[in-house]
Amino acid sequence: MKHHIQLYLKISLTVFLMLGMLSCNAELDDLLSTKNPDSNNPGNPDTDNPDKPDTGAPGTGSPDKPDAGAPGSGSPDKPDAGAPGSGSPDKPDAGAPGSGSPGEGAPGEGAPGEGDPNPPPEPTKILTAVVSTLAGSSTSGSRDGTGAAAEFNFPRGITADNAGNLYVVDTNNNKIRKITPAGVVTSFAGSTSGGYLDATGTAAKLNSPRAIAIGPAGNLYVTDRYNERIRKITPAGVVTSFAGSGTSGQNDGTGSAAQFNSPGGIAVDSSGNVYVADTSNHNIRKITPAGVVSTHAGAGGTVFNQPYSVAVDGNGNVYVADSYNHKIQKITAGGTVTILAGSTGGHQDGTGTAAKFNYPYGVAVDSAGNVYVADSNNKMIRKITPAGVVTTLAGTGTAGYKDGTGAEAQFKDPRKLVVDSSGNIYVSDRSNHRIRKITMEYR
Image (cartoon, rainbow, N blue to C red; front, side, top):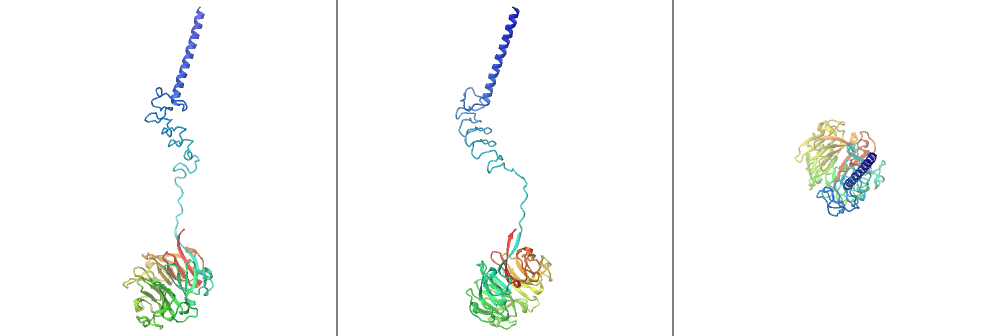
């Protein structure tokens, strides 16, 4: 009997334990089903956890947690897997086209700030002078043509019009040549035979002309050295005598009553006044549009020593290449002369009189007031800021011919230069029989 009772108790205990385990498993299943709702099984709004949205009833859910069945909706942290285009800000849904975790290979995507946070800086570009050849070749001659097919014979003076055309004094050919922006060279006025004759185009005659400048009306003015005159050429090529008698001297006067002595440089201001570097008279002359000649600066010949070139800025200041004094001098509109830069002969960058030039022959000025110098015996092009700071723009200091940047380029005998409206610099490289071009580029 006792044995039967013990067996009964064992069976009852076993049944009790099995029922308890089944109950626990059911509760666990219920708990898991509330934490991981089956999106395919409609939920019961009465029995669901109030903090978890009803996954089956469209549009229902906690005010803080949108229901997973609403199209396009999704928890801010856990989006529904089937809503197209939806996704957590941190974990986009896998089915949205073009989506993907940043940095996981989606085209064009990547985590902001990924990569080297401190990439190496790009190399600093420097404004550099780049020298090229616009026209001419190593062979002297008078042939018209384009670029290197054209020939010059010791060119000197040079000027530019507003259309970008250049006019070059081809001294030993006794001509004025024209160069288009494309490098096409033609003979504009004068003939190789030389002499003195007013006429049109190549029928006119000049005798060793040295410098040229353009006025506000497009007329060209030329220093006709051995004719001791200033010649005027209209845009149509008509050549006339503007001032000078044909005999060397110092007389002021009007037109042919005035005298010059080996006039070398020339410039024209915005009012049409003409300034002449009267080289062997060692002074600067001024000619009004009416042809009245006066001595502007250097009367008595004690201020300048063989001035070879002049340039004028928009304020009426005149700059003089005072060649044998190795200086660039400035004449104010009121006639006061000061030294802008230079001292004794040599080569030295610096400010004002701390800088040195070696027989500067050409001078030009840009719209910002920077002055450019053909430093002939240094075989260089120099730049002077309005504050008088002198630097070397181009040239090695050794005579030669080479295009290139900055100090790589070589000149043989730079004589005159001009700056066009775009800031390009053109140089007559006399003994190389070429016209060189300098552009400023960041490299």
